[in-house]
Length: 336
View: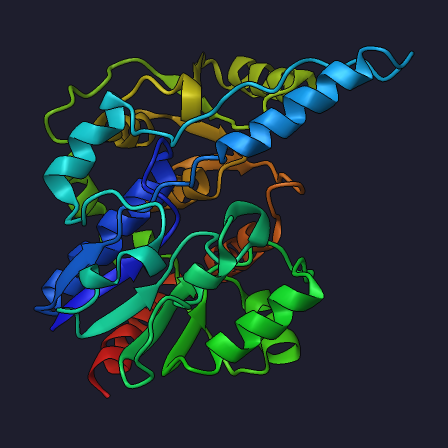
């Protein structure tokens, strides 16, 4: 069976890339053939910039309304530090900015999976309809949502988005979400039943990730890895305090535009750390996978619900049981 995966763009985000790698590896172990749609955010039309610039010029003559000219942005590209891993480890289509305009890519696929990551959070999905597989024209094709995430436990959709996505959700054969709170959101706002499962990264074993970073030399230094996406003075002081108390060297690691580690090096950061401080969901995941002592800092803006579900499972000792349930659910969703 050939399966197309729709997820957040595989750009410059460690967690987003490694979760897709994990899902593809799991599907291959089920003897399926996965391919991920290499989606890129759409460029802003030239006329939008023209209108903005004209407004900026007009505002120049109005006291208190002056503003700077909008900068032209293009479709974001994967940086080399990420491209190397993606090209070697993830099966993907050619880059596309709109799935509805590239329907030829879907012709030879037998099923479609939406997920994982915060694919169903409007603020992170410019075209939310595509995240619900709205580009598919045949109702008979198999649709599965695996660990699709809203990221938060409140409803962020507009009335129109709710109406459209509810209709699309009802076309799915099986729906699972990454957070326990997502089950309730699906029922109350989309009118569909959903099941709570694990993020794809947790479907693999520690050995799978150790194999990915086996060529990265093991660090002999005892250090605290601070992998924090929303760094501020309070968090900085917290990291310094814990490092001093434990007698560890403090090492700061960056993501997104400031990222400098390859994906294997990023995994090795968790593998070799003596302690981890993170506000990243996948930073928390890999602290758990590698058995590290860690401190998780919730970032309310980026979504706390995803942390709560994961940590509740971890602290209750039910993570392995949930892993087996999630694997069985995914296999059943594709075979039933």
